[in-house]
Length: 154
Image (cartoon, rainbow, N blue to C red; front, side):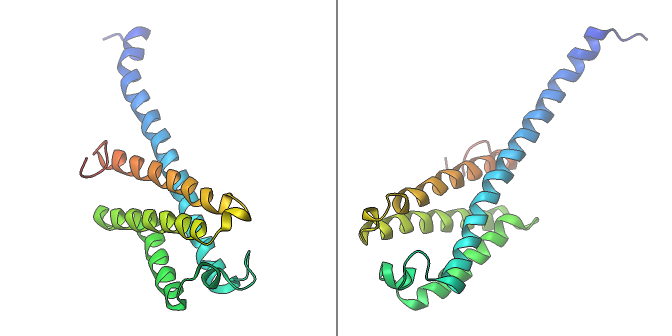
């Protein structure tokens, strides 16, 4: 049996393009997920250990948040980062992490807006929304890689 060049190209093209597409999707997923998780880890470190940057009184005091909320956010963000990065975590747990991070980022934008931080820099309000966009991309590709092709419930 002889295989011509055109037979080889036709038979390998669909699987090859699917493999490249899947690799591209994995790269987009892991890049956006890594960026969002890095931001969450940075905020954990900043609010737990440094907490004087960029506000001298501390971010939680500046935003009018109770001190116990710092502990709650630290634990929730740590669990969320672990849920997204550790293999084998059930998809439903990852969805809870996505939801929690979305609420956190939207709340951060509202808190900075409400405390008048736009006078210092509009980035205090926009920055969490940019990361919300990256979180949305990560969530979209998470669902796509799960075989759903669209977010749960849609």
